[in-house]
Image 1 (cartoon, rainbow, N blue to C red):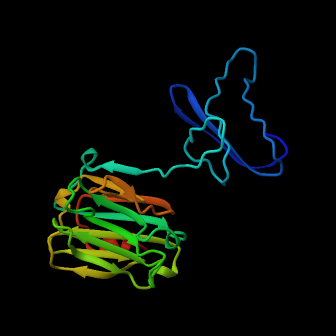
Image 2 (cartoon, one colour):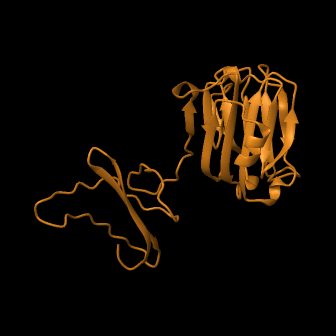
Image 3 (cartoon, rainbow, N blue to C red):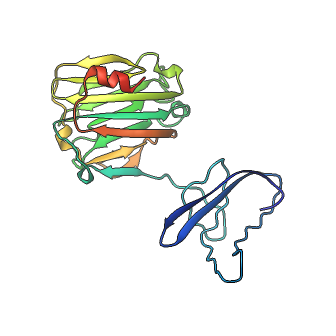
Length: 243
C-alpha cells in the first residue's frame, strides 16, 4: 500500500502453509493497490481473499463479488458437550466492554446459556436492559428454572451503568446462587432450582431463541475473556475474580 500512514501490521499462520496478512493505515487516498510478491525468484506466493474494510483492526473474511457488502452478524457459540460442562453447578466469568450496548437492541446479551427446548429460551445469562429502559447500561442477570421462570435475578446490578468495562461472575447451584461485580457480591439467593442440567450450548454476545430458531439480541461490544468453571465457586472466590 502507498500514500497512507502505516499504523500496524501482522501475519498469522492459519494452517496448511497459508498465512493471513493485514495492514492498518490512516486513509489519505481513494484508490488502493494491493500487491503480493515473493522476495526472490525461487518462491511462489498464492494470494487469496483480499479485503478492504473500515476500522482499526481486521475482521473475519467477508465474501464479496464485485461490490461492497455489509457484514452479516456473526454468531459465536459452543456446544456444552465439547467440554466438561457440569449440569449440577457452575460459574461463568466474563470480562467485557459494554460501552455501546445501551444503544442497540432491547436486551443485548454479554452471554447466554441455552438449550434446544421450545419451552425455555434462556437458562442463565448476563445482559443489559437496553436503550428504551430507565436503567439503560446497567448489568442485568437471570437464571431460569425448567419452565422459563426466573429463580435468580431478572434484576439489575446498581451502579453498573457508570462503567464501560466490567468483570462479572455468576455462580449457580440449587438453592445457592450469587453474582459478583467489581469485587462485591450484590445479589445472592438460597432458594430455587436452576435448570442448568438442560443446558446444551453457550452463546457469546447473543442469545438463541429456540421457538423461532434465530439468534438475536447481539451485544455490540468487545469481550476480553469468558471463562467457565464446572463448580460453584465460593462468594469470596467470585469476588476476587471480579476485582
